[in-house]
Image 1 (tube, rainbow, N blue to C red):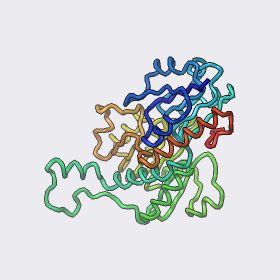
Image 2 (tube, rainbow, N blue to C red):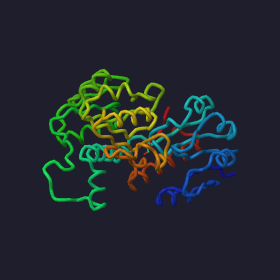
Image 3 (cartoon, rainbow, N blue to C red):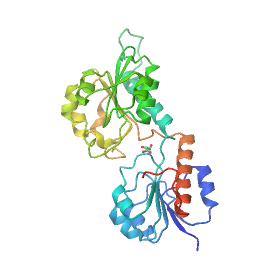
Image 4 (cartoon, helix red, strand yellow):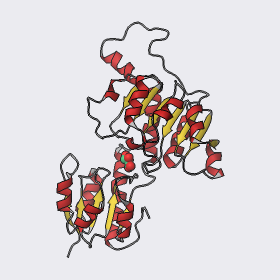
Length: 323
Ligand code: DGY
């Protein structure tokens, strides 16, 4: 009997074509929106493999509904804070993700946010589009630049390192980082980076980029206290997960002019409703979680997820496994 595979979205075209060639009983959510929870709970019953996205919560309730035949869960994402990893592991289900392949696209977008926020790109675009473009003026729409500035990276993993490397090309002269562990001498040497306590990073950085995973330790790491310690001119960028920032505290910090400029690719919730206060700040640039959104990267992510599904169905070791 052909295995049953549930795929929770339409995939990028090349991988979608490859998916259709497989010898599965394919159950696929094809709408242009994430699969509603009640539909997911219904469709998951009796499947052998689940191909999911970061929009689906993988928890005990879902795994109970799936049944004991479920062999593999593969998420088309590098982040897996939407998955109860212990619950999946304790049932001997294989669990896959998509590391490495989105490092460049996400780092590019993080740099875009840092540059865009520091050069007041939101105000610039609005001025040009809304007829506010007056005569050239010596200080009109002046932002700041990165030459000889200090970059603070929170979470110097693959993406954090790629961001730092790119920003050094824009003139950053000092890289400091904080996180769970000090990195190896080789990693530090590649960037001439220094491990510092979180508070030092907050007080000494001109640009702060959040590149860490969302975990119990990093949830709400950036609260009012943290924002209060930053330089008043800081450029603060989060392209990791919205939950790392206590969003009401970020609003308060912006209201009190504690922060120079902000760039966000992630928020809580997602999508962030268009009426949210954060959109009202001219110095807060918000993008709709598009860090990995290049066709090349998304095809690679989808393809890796499919590879994980195929290996899991054959009860083989997953090529891109979380454990
Ligand atoms: C991921 O894969 O975790 C990213 O957030 C998607 O862009």
